[in-house]
Length: 130
Image (cartoon, rainbow, N blue to C red; front, top):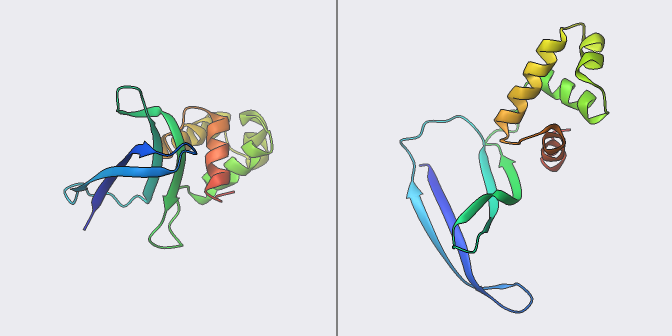
């Protein structure tokens, strides 16, 4: 069974510890995805709505340890990105076109829903992908 759980802390003490929360659990079996479970903690704006622009933390969980968000080649490229290499430098080292590297970068950013390369590297480090 696939469930979506959303919780909201509505009251906290002076130190920010939660005192009161509410949550909603929704059956999402009709969504068929083989992707990992992604836990996201978001800030709530002044109107009481989740603010996706203010994500506090994001963590991926895999059912099988062999599963991975990125392919072997994507991980290889991600390691070079984290080392500060440009797309052209990575392409030269891997004997592939610069466009292929750019395409891998774009695909990785889409897979983990980040907006730029520093966020991608940060996500990969937090998830212990690299």
